[in-house]
Length: 542
Image (tube, rainbow, N blue to C red; front, side, top):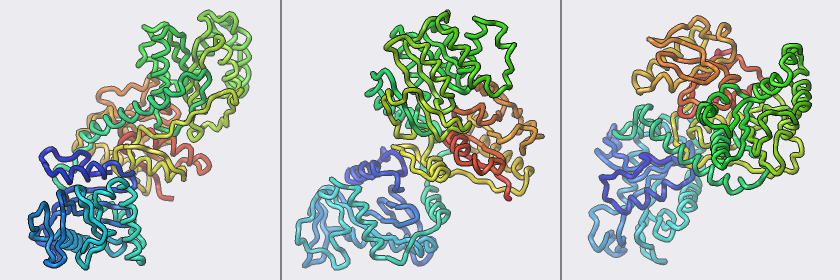
């Protein structure tokens, strides 16, 4: 991540712009800060100094990069530096070394644990072999025009050399590094209120999902597709996009998911009432509608609390009436949340397809919170495709998700976002007090609207830490309805069973300590991945 995210329009330094763009394309393992100016806090710092780029390998190392454009020469006899034939008052090595030592003295706590070094960057010229250099300088710390071709490799090598130079410095604690980063971001123009930042980040998410859709289109001609992807990889958006496109081509489409709230939201966004070519529903609503149409009393006559009702009875009943289905068969079936479906549901749904039609199933087994362990009938006949990238969450939220599942989640250009906030509380009263404080601060100081906020419970409200909470300020605390609508003058709460497959800008998950250990991994992953921009977690200390 680079700060700021765009090169300042007022700057006309071409060399720094070249390096800024190169650094912008480095992998997300680096944090980069451009044009940081400092005023001394102690006698051990220069009164004022500036560092062109501070390149950080989080918790492991820091390199201060001094950039000089044009043709750079060093006269070994006179011990003088020249830029475009003009003598420099202060050599770039002295500039970089002096600024780096000031930075080390400014941040003594972190410099004890991680190595801090410097390097020079000359993007417009190449240092010839055998060139005389100052005695305090070797070619390894110079990034010239030649090294720009393999820039990330060159940066990696700088950190390897830095570690070899200071082998006893094994890294700092995460909170120490974050304190250092927060200090660098206090400058004017770097910190935005969260509401403004969300607007900027949203545009990045839109571009990411567009890229993901284009990648997917390469396989979309296959008639049978099984698509797997992590939370936030755009499965639902792609499913909706495909349904729209097939319907526009006069194909009859069945778009199905497990969650009723998600289904209602999709129906609204697709304008189902005005589109005869799309049926958007859950398996439950689809089955009930068809069965009641053909045998009105069957539904009432059967015991719906019986475990076999949805597993066996409903699929068998649907199978008996397929041939007399009044709506006719479909040219395409698109199933989202496939990990929540039962095997017999798939079998009977496939029979509602015309011959040579499309079947597309989207799923993520890490979100199998109902423990279906589903099998797809004739799975070997499906073309498999993996959506690789998370396109929904900020990098900080993705890092937390990786901790939860103990696995890597691919991302590409995701906005950095804020750290996940973990609130350890003594009791339910503490949870409610801190929750109110956090929400009021966001709305007051960061221009966050009530419809950007959701409280996610891990129990019924009457059993939760907000059981007696009626209002936060002027906003009523109200359950989210099954259409997923955020109402005026309300702050909504719900559970993951209702909100699965959906997303919100800022999520507050309470009573995390209520989650059973054997369910924690999948449930916490599914819950936390609903947060796009900021995530708060509240638990009671055991």
